[in-house]
Image (tube, rainbow, N blue to C red; front, side, top):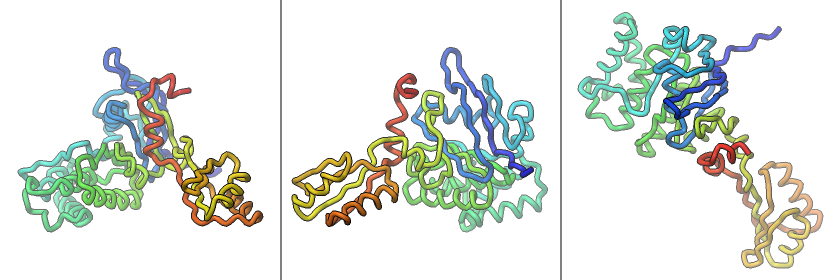
Length: 316
């Protein structure tokens, strides 16, 4: 029988409360090994609490968590050997140099000196920090600090890395530089668990995305699958004159014509098959289209449609 790889992460029935306040409510989630998984959600949704539980920093209230088949509660030491964590704020020492920060982590991991030197040099080069390696970190830019922070989390060669809003506060160029580093890390086979409030970030990086709201997963799938959950996709067609527009509107099901703009808006799921069918029908009738644009919902639309609602409404 074919073997099935062990998932990087499996969560079943996870709950966490502080007094009467339920932070995480019966979460079920699976993350495949070697993929980039992104968790979206508004402030207070429970993202950071979930990461802290998965990183074995706090205990869950109930439920089962397995990291590469190891129980995160009863085998916490083994799980810690398999993961790296980069939190919301760079955990670097500004007085030390970049090299010294990395070597400090190496000593905490009980690596021998030659291995520490080798891994430090490799990571400084990988994250384009070699030229700044001997400068105090308090002279680094925000983007450089973030890259060093990520490098430090990789010193132990983890199989899975948790990135908790890693680009918060970075300028657009630094954010894109870090995206490049994350892509390269994922390409090497490391599993990435990314929490973010930047929807473009999830769209650009993630193989799968889940939306967390009010402590519950309200949607889970690829970016394209999530976008299809939200209505509003359409084709916008422009015509040369009102006569052609009227003819087109008569055959386009659900179309809405704008005589002033000579445009026709037709509901669409964005599929090539639907567009081909419509254009073939127009061609059969001699209806010439001057311009065609496609609008599909983006992750912003998904986020606003699925979050911030009462739980009963979100579940409806």
